[in-house]
Structures are given as C-alpha cells and as structure tokens.
Amino acid sequence: MKTLLSCSLVVASLLALTAATGTTHHGGIGTDVTIAPKTAGRGDYLIRVKVTDLATGTVLAGPSILVRAGQQAEADTTISEPATKVTVKGTVDSTAQLASYSVIVRQGDEVLSSHTAKIALR
Image (tube, one colour):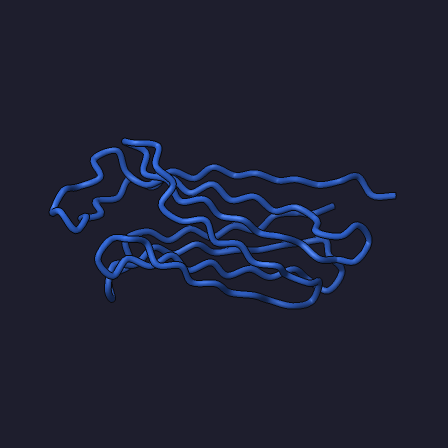
C-alpha cells in the first residue's frame, strides 16, 4: 500500500497589489500549494492553493482543483481587489507519478506573479 503523500510548497512572491482603497500590500503575497491524494489507489489528487497577504496574514483566496491521473484541471478565483484573479492549473500524468501545477496572479491583463512546479508523487 502506498504511503499517503502530502507535498507542501510555500512560495512567497513580493508583489505590489493595489487595493480598492489605493493602498499597497508592502509585505507581498504568499502562495501555499498542497498536493495530496484524494482517494487512495484511484489516482485522484487534490491541489489546494492559499493566497495570503504577507503583511496582514489575511487569506485572500483559496482555490482548489481535483485532478485525476492522466487529466488536467483549472480554476479561477477573483480576489476582492480590482480585477485581480488567481488561476490554478494542474495535471497528473497517467501513471500518477508526476504532478505539475501553475499559479498565476493577474491584475487586469498584467501578470503580477507566476509560479510553476513539477512534483514527484512516488
């Protein structure tokens, strides 16, 4: 029986997001990504993202996607800031040995932050 896998990456991106009040997040934005099996033996993986304002500790968004082996998934979440969107994309290879994901933070058409990674699941 495979050991339960939980892989957590913490990625901190220093961004200057302008809030509706015109203030700036001087502490930047943190992105915590966790990949864990959803159902043992089925090849389903849950990719969870937590977007945090590092200056205040406030969670700004928390999208998650369920990815089956051999497939891909995508989710968009809008942050309560003007036209700021978090996009999460993920794939798991057909053998459930490798997962990849990307997290992109956009304000309007401008990419403020982008992060991609590949994770060995076994």
